[in-house]
Length: 200
View (cartoon, rainbow, N blue to C red):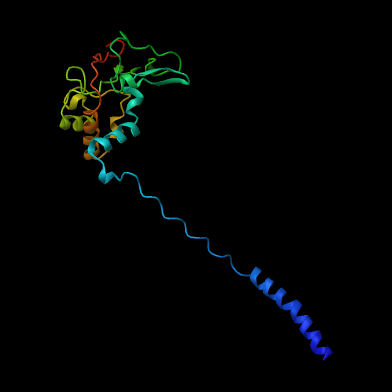
């Protein structure tokens, strides 16, 4: 009887220890399944062309040059009262900047006029103003971005306009950008013609 009690006492100590050791040697449990991703708030398929165009205009950095910059509390910021109206006609530039030292390209304070080996280029007015704005059809807009021809038919588009990068966009995206540009406020602002390089 005493031997049986001794064995029961040993089992009562060793069985829980064996269970604990076995549990420690098991592979870790699989992590819980991740929650399902939230559905996009506005799938591209439900956007109008103009809504998609707005995203492309903002994401493509068009405001960086075509919306004049102004001084803000944290430095230069886009002046959205002149949204996409291009180089202000009130700022006159008469000659290219002459490069000094290692400097190759220069821009003005509004970031709408650029001077380099090509001369001086001015950011175009992209608003739908009939006299001074985006004076081209949707077809010519697409041709201009795809081919680098100003207005789709004229001189080459000058730096820093990155038409070479935008030319890889599908035509539907370029048409969407054009559709959006037709919806923004029309701002009368006559952008000057480019200035040729020094000595030409």
